[in-house]
Amino acid sequence: MTDNNSYIIDFQNVYKSFDDKKVLRGLNLSIRRGETLVVLGRSGCGKSVMLKILLGLLPADSGQVFVENTEITELVEGSLFTIRQKIGMLFQGAALFDSLTVAENVAFALKEHSKKSAAEIDEIVKKNLQFVDLEGTEQLMPSDLSGGMRKRVALARAMAYQPQIMLYDEPTTGLDPITATTINALIRKTQKELGVTSIVVTHELDSGFSVADRVAVINDGVIIEIGTIEEIKNSGNEFVQRFIAGPK
Amino acid sequence: MKDRLQPIIRFLIHLHGITELFGRTVFYSFIKPFYLRDTIEQMHSIGVRSLIIIIMTSGFTGMVLSLQSGYEMAIYGAKMYVGTLVSVSLVRELGPVLVSLVVAGRVGAGITAELGSMNVTEQLDAMRALGTNPIKKLASTRFKAILVMLPLLTIIGDMVGILGGLVVATSSLGISSSFYWTTVVRAITFNDIVTGLIKPFVFAMIIATISCYMGFTARGGTKGVGEATTQSVVVSSILIFIFDFFITKLIFAITW
Image 1 (tube, rainbow over the protein chains, first blue to last red):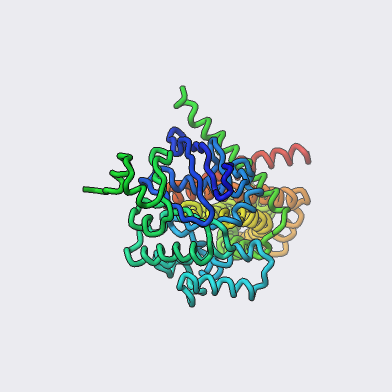
Image 2: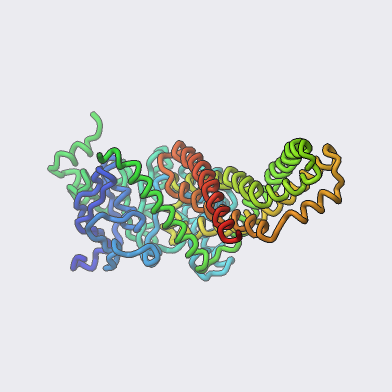
């Protein structure tokens, strides 16, 4: 782990391949406590894989990942629970449990792992749904919700256990501009009001720049540039400039 | 050379995966939390909702068996013993295999499709991210439910099949009801009952493990889920026949 204790997450020389396809090729990335770091990169460049390694959902081939000074790459499934309690994740497709209602989805982790009473859990569910402006949807099924609503419920679910770190996998992909703006506002609100550290991976520049404290650009499995929005915009790196310029 | 070895390597990888899943599922079945409510829901879904199809298939199988064997046995003057043939065939062999195949088709396919869909839509990852082990919450509950319900369904299937045989024996073969029951009771031994209950117990493990494994490893969107579902039924059915042979052989070796 780096000496600087302000870093809550630290990727050190992480490699990951799927069969012959090398996805991460020595990824190094440190995330400061309380910041929102946006990781920009093309589709399929390993952004989601990076988040899944951080949660222990995928094993790294080599390298180390630290979460609050705990090295997680060598932990077995059972031991990862303590780490996962600190991290919430918003999946790309929301990943709500189809067979459960909105309220049951949000209450899932609390019912599974906490000793809170049913009334306390109901109160937390209500509060979290209010946070994402979805009060009154408790009894709806995921199939009754629009794409944006599903993402907001998934955010409420991820926040239910009060994580210190939030991971967002392409939070605005496939959403209309107005709904995307709502989700971006929620990401900012989550960081400001609850003080969580956030990693947002996306290939959408506008969305990324609207929530970022710092921006990292990933290409070919390594971070090629990292800095503030201004620093990224003024980067001399050719790929970064092409990525920012977009299609001509 | 590498290409030629690919199917063998794939087979060994699957074999390892299935064995590992089986071991973990059994292990987690004895570790808290037991997810009793989920298990009971699965027992209802697997057992109660399979009743109609089990009654229909077993009943008509018993009737056909009685009809076919009755006319053949009449040639040798043994028509009166159709109850013996129907009951022994059903309890020892047809009941466990037939019910298990029906359950593999109805329940096993459903489990693979459900878990496969959860897998390709990242619901299993979300469950793990929320600190819950999918093998424990999803596989172990289904495993326990099938383990309890399949032997029960087999007993029901055997009884309905024997009743189906009775209907044909009395209505078409001119055998009295009391004589039919006498031959049935005399024919079935304790060994037959034990054999008939060991088999569905083993088949239940096969169906639960294969269907969960195929669901957990489904890849490639809805097409992949469809393929996994088909493979689940095919592999379970083949394994049921293979294990049926070896269990029968083992039991004969022990008891004879």
